[in-house]
Length: 276
Picture 1 (cartoon, helix red, strand yellow):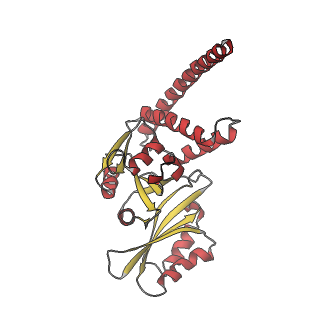
Picture 2: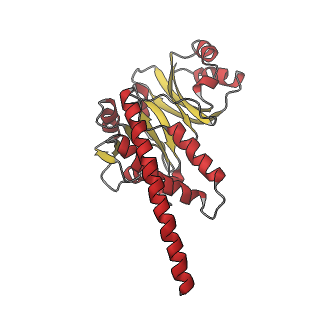
Picture 3: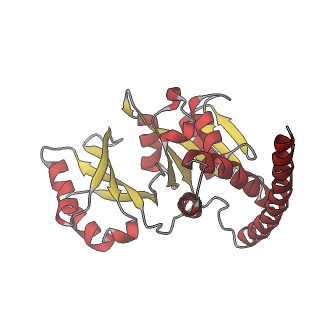
């Protein structure tokens, strides 16, 4: 029992040091928030988040697991973000829905959540500034890409700024699938990125093969693909996800090549690959 008491005393001392350091970190976060607000910079930075979590896992000597480190720092970052600004995250569905649980697992318990009636309402909340970011489902394991999300992406001025890894749902199998975070920020390269591209092409035989040929010629790897009918009767929308940041994709050359077979190319966002 004496050993137990002594170990608990050591933990109490460590907790005191941890609390002091966390408060020091929080003060620095407030200073960062003031700078961001002064220069109208986005509060949420997916690239910074990814690099921090990856670095923490690489530097850890155990016994904490990767999942434990992510969970601990998710709440630390959530508390820090809330000190920088009154952050609101929009997501479809009522409190407790799959999207809301995914958003909570991603942004932590210290920010506000706006539960919207629909996916389109999430986009509107972010566009109008009611929310800083939005979390929406992109793909359902049983039904593929969600048309409602694709329709909004085709016409929004917002960008995809992050993709949420399914393991952030804390083993909640009802929320498996792919989710994206939408916002107004444009990410800088992280070193391990992916880009979503929208191609608007004429609806005729061979048009898709011709449209995708430049990606093959430029050795750009395509990782996901979805199609959606356009509002114009003779057009089809193709959503293509590629490896790499848009700055790596030879955009001028790609645009020139795609212009020959596509009526429009729209970069929907470049964002870090989710941590697995």
